[in-house]
Structure formats: structure tokens, C-alpha cells
Length: 214
Image 1 (spheres, rainbow, N blue to C red):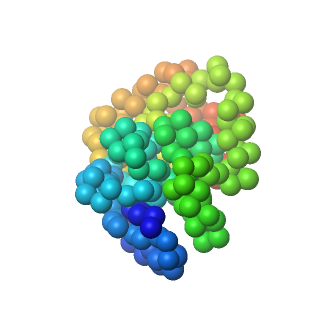
Image 2 (tube, rainbow, N blue to C red):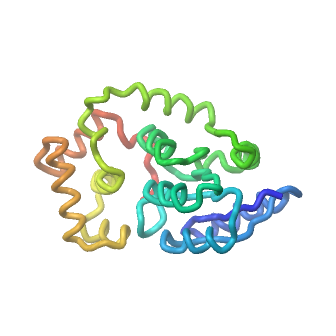
């Protein structure tokens, strides 16, 4: 039996994933988390083989969560399930310790295969994601955005999506002052001076072309 924890802030998504998983005789859902702050507790209490982890949960960055789960619960395999199809997220998720990466729009057809492969000790990435991963790994090592931290990249994405500092602070469960500091750092690292310049940079670097979820 593959023991699974579902971590996603949308109840409809969790219910849909549970429905897909519980049709399989060798899969059992042993827990759920709706907030980043719940993930470690649920994993500790249930000892799952695999956690299906969304990257866009309120609170801690999804990439930070991948790293945290990998460090604190090394026996639990991590299958990222997200709307983010950008190579920046694919590359960073694997570097943080994920064993698989799946977009939500392909979950209905690929989830079970991905889950079994990850649970068996393998690595899963769809052909489309494999191409993005290869492109990301071939990226110029001196590209300024490669030096951004995971949290700076998340703030960057949200600014490009038009969120205010207050909205970003609320989504990430930090103060607006903290978000302002992250913004200042990423502007400095990218050698830019305004939100408009950030948007231009993101377009030119093709950083967030598939982003559709805040």
C-alpha cells in the first residue's frame, strides 16, 4: 500500500485527488494539509510514502516546503503537483529535493503512474516537463535571475502578476516590510529600478510564460 498525504490549499482539488487515488487498490490517502504550516505535522503524524505537494499554498514558499520535508522527513518522497509549468520552478523543485513534478492539468491522466514511480524510488517528469528541465539546466549560469533565492523568485512572480506588496505579504504570511526587503534585494540582484523593469525582464527571460495561478 502506497501511503499518501495531499497538501493543497483548495478543498476541491484535494477532494478530486483523493477520488483519483482511492480508486486504486494499492494507494491509500492517510492525511491532508491545507496550509504550509500544517505540512510537517501531518507528515510526522502519518509517515506517508509520498506527499503530493502544491507549490502555491499560503505561508511558506512551496520550494521552501520541498526542502523542509526532504530534510526533516527523508523517507517521504515528494511529488510536486502544481499549476507552475515554468522551467525555473521545475529546476528548483528538483534541486530542492523533489522526486517528481506534475502539472495539475495532467493529473487526471498521469498522477497514478507518477505516484507509483516516485513511491518505487524513481523520478518522474512528463516529456513536456523534461524538455523544460533540460532547458533550465542549460541556462546561462551567469543569468542574473539564477542568483535569486526561492522566496525572491516567488515575490518576483507575484509582482509580475500585478500583486501589491500588501497582497504578497498576506499570501506569504509575512509583513509588507519583509516583502519590500525581498523586492529591494531582487531589484539589486537584477540591477533594475522599477516594477515595470521587472516585468520587462521577466518577458525577455521568458520566466513565467505559463503562470496562471496566484
